[in-house]
Length: 458
Image 1: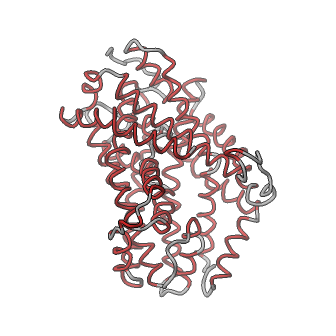
Image 2 (image 1 turned 135 degrees about the vertical axis):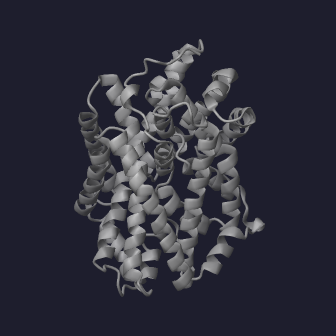
Image 3 (image 1 turned 45 degrees about the vertical axis):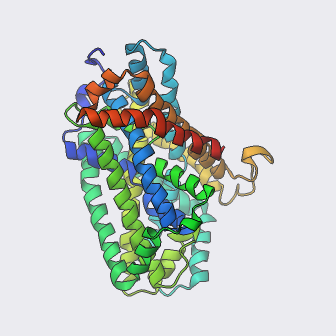
């Protein structure tokens, strides 16, 4: 493979430290999926059985795909689309392979049209917690509070804009002073806050019940649907399929082992998800509440639990602040994917490109907000896959069930089958045996797992 000395803008786009790169990648992976979605999915789908399959998926599917994205970015040192095109041409393959990068970039943009809205809910709940908004509430009052938020588009717009402004403040700067410094600051604090929540759950809640629920699998509850759900969430949990790790890999030097980096990201992501589950369920079980509450777990069940606990107001604020941090680090990665792609193509500055991208996110994101109120009755179709789906549901379906798995599948197949093995070995770093294991997982196990998830969810 020829040396890539002329990658666009690489002289000013690079991580200044190994730890900065790792924290940024972990931050990209750790988001609402870990703190919000993992606990409620475990709560509704068998606890330990779900967790067991999830852990297997992380190592057999998610980590190999993460490594494929990282090595694709590092070999080409371009935006996600141009990285694939560059590698395809350099290895005498059609540039048409670049469509895999384009699908992943599109997935990132689609996520940007609803992820900041949901993150805005978390910011709203942080604000409510800081002023003691849930103190003394009963179950009906907590549920009404959430329903009132969804019914108020002006309030949701305010928090959406606030969240986007935080994102823009970071992304408009260069990689070192923006993304890297933000993650170096946010990630250790996030972890510390999460540990504090777990300790609080151990003292005021029932941590024994939480650990038993998460780590004692009931094999009778392992159904095809539970397996599919756990595999699907394990794949998405590490942040693959949306070009985030391709983009971050493009800023990486050649002294870091891709295999070790991918494993570190996968393990850190899993630890955060498990700690969140332990802390949340310790609090839930300690208040004799029902763990199988679905998406309402952190917006209904947890506020109810905190409202009746010693120090609940403070720890509710702490919890929602850590979720805001987790959401922000992921949103930074999603935005960086689009900003890098557009700035490469149009030659515009980071600041100007960031403004345009976030304005588009805001405008299209309004359809997500209105899906819960003034457009709640609107449906794209009365039949087919979009039947009974709001605009938000339709975007979520296309992104989660089509774009992300398809993008992840095409990238791992491209890195494993199209890029010559001796080329990927040269850039993989670490030991040859680690590359060999990755190669076979990326060629066989990971694609088969993603194909199954993709077909089953259509």
